Amino acid sequence: MSVFKAYDIRGTYPDQIDAGLAYRIGRAFADFLGKGPVVVGRDMRTMAPEIQGACIEGILDGGLDVIDIGLCSTPQAYFAIGHLGAAGGLSVTASHNPAQYIGFKLTREEAIPISGDTGLKQLEQMATQGEPPAPQAARGSLSQVDTLADYVAHVCRWADFARPLRIASDAANGMAAHTFPAVLAALPQIENHGLFFELDGTFPNHEANPLRESTLADLKREIASSGAELGAAFDGDADRCCFVDENGRALGNDIVTTMVAQEVLGREPGAAIVYDLRSSWVLPETVLAAGGKPVKERVGHSFLKARMREHDAPFGGELSGHYYFRDNWYADNSEIILLSVLNLVSRSDKPFSAMASKLMRYHSTGEVNFEIEDKAAALGKLKAAFADGSTDEMDGVTIAYGDPSASGWWWVNLRPSNTEPLLRMNLESDDRACMEGMTAKVVGILGVEPLL
Image (cartoon, helix red, strand yellow):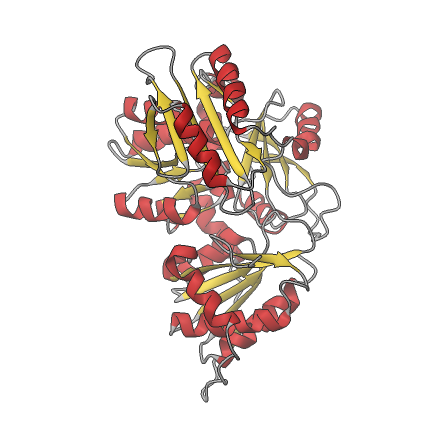
C-alpha cells in the first residue's frame, strides 16, 4: 500500500518511510514547487529529526532555500508558511497515528494544501520512479527561524474573554504540549488543568486521537476533580481539538461548529459557513436562521479550504475536529477554535453543557465504521434499498427522507474512508426510535457488523 494518501504522506518507519525516501520526497518537492523558500518543521516523534534532516537535504539539493522552524505543531507550520511568505512548506508528522508512524503534510504558498487531486500523485511519481535527479549546481541555503512567539501573538488575536475561565486540557504528549503552554502564558485569564504536557513520541498515556471516546477518560476525570468549565483534547500534531462539557459529555464537533458559526455571523451577517456533509442538519438550519449561507462540502481539509476560498467564508468546520479560519490562511487551528469557544462561554450566563444541549435536538449515530472489501457494491446495495429517497453522491452516497421543516425525517451517508480501508456511516433523525430502527436496517443491508 502506498504511503502517499489522499491528503498527506504517512507510513511506518523505517520499512515504509526511511531517510532515503525522505530525501527523495524533499528533492521532488523542490522540483514541484520550483521556487523557495520552503518552510520545514517537525513533530516530537523519535525519528522525526532524522526524517526532517533528510528531507531538508533533498530540498537544498533541489536548489531551494529552506527555513527550518524546528519543533512545531502543524498549525504552527501553516502559520510560518503564511507569515514568512514562503513558497510552500511541509510538516514532518504522522498526526494521531501510533508511535511507529511518520509522514509529511505539504502545502503551497499561504498554506494551500497539496492533496491527491492537487499534486500529491505527481509528487509520488517524482519521488518513487527512477533515480533522483542530480543536485543542482547552485545548492539552496539553510536558515533557522523560531516562529513560536509570533505564532502565539497571532493565535491570541482570537481571545476576547469577558471573565476568567477554568479549563482542563489533554495534550496527549503531542505537539499541543509545545504550543499551548506558550498561548496560556500570554492569556492569564485561563486557568488550565493540563494532562500529558510532556512531549513524547511514544505516546505513553493514550492514543493521540480525541475522536476515540476511550482517549477522553483521563480528561473527564480531570474536569470532575478540577471543576473545569470544559475540557479540550488535542490530537498528535495539534491541528484538531475535541470538546467535553463540564459534566463529562463529549460533544460532536458539528455542534461546536454551529455554536461558533452563530457568533461569526453576528460579526459578518450573510457570510458563508462551510461544513462537511456528515454534520447534523442543525448546522445548516442554524446558519440559515442566523442569516448566513450554509455551504456543504465533501469530507477532507483540502476540499473545505478550497470551498472557503471560493466563498470567502470566515469559518468552517468538520466532524473530525478540524476548524478553519479565513484570517488564518483558511487553515485549521486547534487553539483558535478553543479560544473561540472560550469567548462564548465567558459571555454566557449558562454552562457549556446547556449551550450545547440547546443545539443537540436531533439524534445521530456519530461515525460508525465497517470493514467491507467491495465498497462499490455496498454503496450500490444502499442506493437500491432506498431508491425512493433523495440521493446525493457528493461523497459516497447520502440518502435523505423528509427535511427539518417537518417531523419524521432521517438521512444516512455511507462513504469510503480517504485514510483507512473502511466504509464510514453517519445517520441522523429527529426521532430517536427512527434513528435506531434505520441504523439497524442499514446494518442489515450491508450484512456486516460495525467495528467497535
